[in-house]
Structure formats: C-alpha cells, structure tokens
Length: 322
Image (cartoon, rainbow, N blue to C red):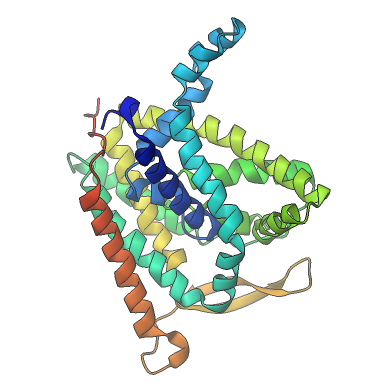
C-alpha cells in the first residue's frame, strides 16, 4: 500500500491495531511489539519513530518551517497507532487487571495462542534461513527465556525512578517477546503505574506528576531505542527478525498459563503477591485448571493470527541483508 495515499478508513484500522498493542502492553508477559509484528506494522512503526529525530527536522525547526516538519514525520500514522494504544490503556486497564486477578489462566491461554501462532507467520518474513539466522533465533530465545525469569523487586517511588522505569519499559515494549509491563513488574512498578491511571480519572495531581514523569521517560526511551532497532533492520534484516522471533519463543515461558507459586512477597500495600513461580502441567480432571476453556481460547488466539496474516495486504518486503 502507498502509505501517502492512506484513507480515513485505513487510519481507523491503524488505530484499532494500536488498540490491540495497548491491550497487550497492559498484560505483564505480552509485548506490544509482538502485536505490532503480528499486525504487520512493526517495521513501519520503528522507522516512523526514528524519523522524529531526523536531522532535517531540526533544520526545519531552526527556520520555523513547521510544514516541512509535518512533511518529514509520518504524524498521521503515529497519531493513529499511539492514539489507539492510549485509548486501550486508559479504557481497559482496570478490566485487564480484574481478569488477571480472577481468570489468569484464560487470559494467558489466549495470549499463548497468539504468540505461538505469530512465531510461524513471522518466520515467513525471513527470506533465507542459514547459520546466522538460526543462531540469532537461538540467542534470542535464550535471552527471552532468561529475562522473563527475572525476580520482581521492591524499588523507590521517586519521580526519577519512575522516569527511568518508563525508559526501560518502553524499550521492551517495542521488542517482540520482551514485555514492557513485565519489566515494570520486575522493577516493582507495574501495579504502582497501573493504579495511577485511576488516579488521573479522579484528577489526583500526584498521579498526573507520576504519569508525566513516566511518559517523558517512555518518549525519550522509545525514540532512542528505535534508532538502534532501525539500524539493525536496515543492515541485518533477516538476522534481526530471526532474533526477535527467538525473543518471542523465549517469552512463552512467562505466558504459560499454569503456574505454581514457590515464593511470595509483600508489596508496599501489605498484600501478598507471587515472587517466584514455576510452570506446571495442568490436570484435566481439576476444574480449577480450566483446561478445555483454556485450550479453546488458545486455539482462538492461534486462529486470529492466521486470519490477520491472510488478510494483511500491506506487509513490507524484506530487504536483503548486506
């Protein structure tokens, strides 16, 4: 599709894709980058974010040429996608939090099917599988597996640390397989940041300050990190895609629905939360394991990705590696 000729309907679809990314970002263990990859907008997203700090923009700003700035930056694409992300975060964050608390197995099962299916569909974007791409996939899988096994910690609630958490989390959010929300869990800031969304609805000034610091951190982090990812895509496309697929495979350790809690920790609100969990096999006869419902949702997630892959008509061609 010629991106300069997108229609209003196209931007509505982009906003819906951003909404799906936002839904994924709210869940610790599922990456918004994974959803962007599944929905076929990942590389355009990275390149669009990268363009925000193009040298031409600073030259145009120095001459107060605002029109040139809007010509350089694909702002319609960015507004549509991130508008959808923000709508999802502020509208469904409480619902996702409730589902995580009351029906975690069903939610994880759905996302497990999504991610597992996307590994196969995205693998088709690697033009040549060789020792470099296979090696990158293995390295990515090992890194993803180890990262999602990190143990959550207690950390300060000062604005400087909230800012730092935003920078770290957003870098993971644009990496398929590594969940920004999960890294917030590791940093001890997931529930804290999620609770501030409700605070904004209640016009709490402190919540605005905290989310403001977090937001500034995410903007700086995502623009900086996009430069790195875009560079790798341009020079080592197939190897980069293979490593990202590996990260997604490794992340399945975190998304596995059935877990046994080994250690608990008390958060700042005095509530017990899981600290260390092991994956276990479900028991068919145990109604609490919800095996058949979980399997059904995993299949639905699996099928959704295949349908999206078949319907996608604007996937970018994979450039050859140098």
